[in-house]
Image 1 (cartoon, rainbow, N blue to C red):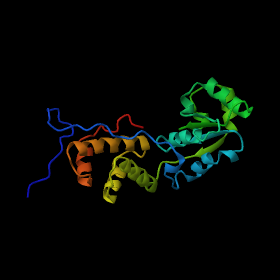
Image 2 (spheres, helix red, strand yellow):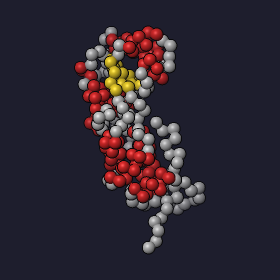
Image 3 (tube, helix red, strand yellow):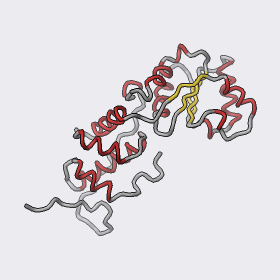
Image 4 (tube, helix red, strand yellow):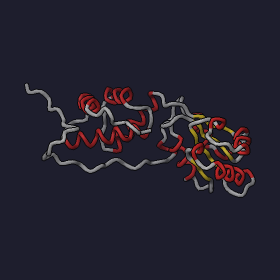
Length: 221
């Protein structure tokens, strides 16, 4: 019996293989395709139920890759005239302060801020913003648990037209960073490699692929 073909993922040699187009879907930020679990369901409910916020400003706080951007864009698309500011801790402090004041004064729609850090760790020196944020309600997200990651991984493979085995999903959970952008990037690259090699999407193929790509997730949040 012949040994399985080893894909030439990083070979610099010319090849007659047809390199497929990048078919990775653009992110689809909707509430109904946000995968929930113990790590994020409370934050999800609070953001989605914005009509019940105690004030028209809410901070969505959680680590990178926990779903803040997805929830924020889904919320902003609800048609309520609200404003979503992602990575609020890196934005101009005076701009964020002004947006908060407008929302509180009823001069603009509700405001959703997202940050990886609690407000007292934001890298700015605007006392008025610190004071405002002390009284701002917080919706928290945690690092995704395995059940959430499994749902995300299966959805990303579904978007490429593939149905995958449980052992492959489990391997990817242990091999890649626990964030949606990293998973989207890794699965897109894995799918393109399999199409280029005309290979089945198996755990064995994924192991060879990831082992040949040690820097695959560098600079991917």
